[in-house]
Amino acid sequence: MPIDFEVTMDEYLPLRDVVFNTLRRAILRGELKPGERLMEIQLANKLGVSRTPIREAIRKLELEGLVLMIPRKGAEVAEITEKNLRDVLEVRCALEELAVQLACDRIDREELGGLYAAADHFRDVLDSDDITLIAQADEAFHDVIFAATDNERLIQLLNNLREQMYRYRIEYLKKKECYPQLLAEHSAIIEAIESHDKEKATAITGQHINNQVDTVVGTLRHRDEE
Image: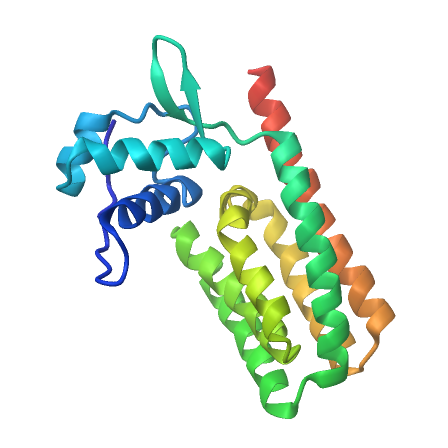
């Protein structure tokens, strides 16, 4: 099991929480892959901690559905399932549709300029082979819309969902044939927000997310058939 991530210490958090956050992030970002075994001793040695916080972190990850305990085999990273994907994206769709509706009412000229800049940056990085960089640019585009809502509770909910979304966002962005459609959807969302057209902005955002569902579900089903 190659490990290419590091623990990030936080003086304000107990060690067990730091280890949990590190492993959780590694799973969500795909650094620990679905089906990969979590070997306590190897993880403890890599992160420079005892086995106790590793064991506690694995138990918490199991409760979140990110880790499975397999009899006589131990812990492994849970597979990405169609059910989990649909659950997460249904919530994301509802929240992001609300976000664009509020943005239509509340976005100012500076934020609109930031939205255009974020869309341009996303377009600029699409030639990169770094999927993480592309995912960050996509997130940055949506973050401008979230900020324009001026609703801190909504932004908090969307940020909490971000990590759960990351696995699926990466899977989607691996499909380079989807990039022209993504660019067109970003442009249409900007146009709708700029013209304060809530109905159009809501419809495009819903389609934007449903396209992601369809693409990733197709990938999952193809893997299952192999």
